Structure formats: structure tokens, C-alpha cells
Image (tube, rainbow, N blue to C red; front, side):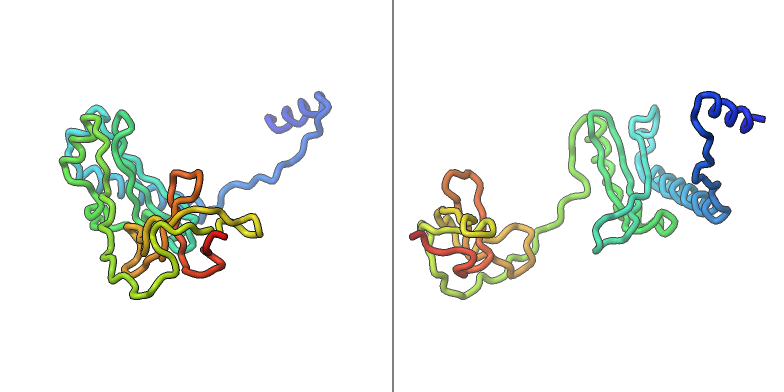
Length: 213
């Protein structure tokens, strides 16, 4: 009767009633969703078991667990993300690179912050966790003679085409960013004219950096 009424009402308003491309979820899809929800609930329980219980009282900390799709082709297609949410935008987010049903309790335990971090977040302090990784060992500076020295005026290729060159001055030799792999250096760090930020030249070649005319 309801369907008939809808069809009649649609016809009366001049809109033809069309059957949409809808389908009920299959039995397999329902089972997969049920399995996912149970796994997420299990992970959330582990998180709550390994944090000081006083922060769960009155929802001082909200624990949220979800699965997200990772767009990086070098990582797992699905990550399980844990959020510990405190007021004043405090707390943390960490992830396990697998679906929730594959997460083990040891995975959660290894990622949980120490108790003192919960106290800091509850007090409104934006303490960082997980801690940033230790920078790798720099390694030896290449034993290669470079064409330019500090203070030399150069032109750097910053875009394609004849207009893609920008003038500047060499400010350091054998530049290295803190998290670059061991032994990786760039021959030059340069300050471009009219810019406060610095760039680096990855190669000591004329198609990358050359002397100013």
C-alpha cells in the first residue's frame, strides 16, 4: 500500500515514478560489516584497558577507533586509527597499518603513550606523542671538490623553460636536512634574491645551478 501511494503521489505531481538502482546489502556484506564493528570495539577496549581509568570518567578523554583508507601506495591499503581526544584540542592520534581485525593487543600496547602524557593533555598541554623519530646518522661528507664556494653568486633552476632561473647566493656547502638518509647531502644551500627562505641544489651541474653572468 505504501509503495502504491508513493507511485500515485508521484504521478499526481507530474513526476514519473522510477525504480532506483538500489539493492539491499548481501549476506556477505552484512557479515563483513559485523566483523569490522566487532574488531573496532575490541581494539577500543584494549586502548581503554591500557590507559589510566580516571580519564575515562565523565568522558574526560574520548577514545575513537576507525578504519581509514591509505592513499599511499607504499603503505597498507587500510589503517586502523586510534584517537585519544581531550578538551582544548589536546590528545593524540596513532595508527596500526592493518585492518582492525588484524590488530593484536601488543600492537596497541606498543603505541600507547606513558601515563604522564594523559595528565598533560587533561591539563590542557599539547604534548606531542608519538615522539618524532631520532634523526639518522649524517654519515661522512662527500670528498668531492665543488665548483662554487660560500658567497658566490649563482643562478638556480626552479622551473622549466628559459625563464625558470632565479639568482641568489650560496650560503652553505654540503647541506643536509635532519631526516635525510645517512650519507645523503646536497652540494649547495642557496638564498634566492628577494626571498627569506632557503633552497638547496641537489646536483652540482649546469642544468641545476650555474654561475651568474
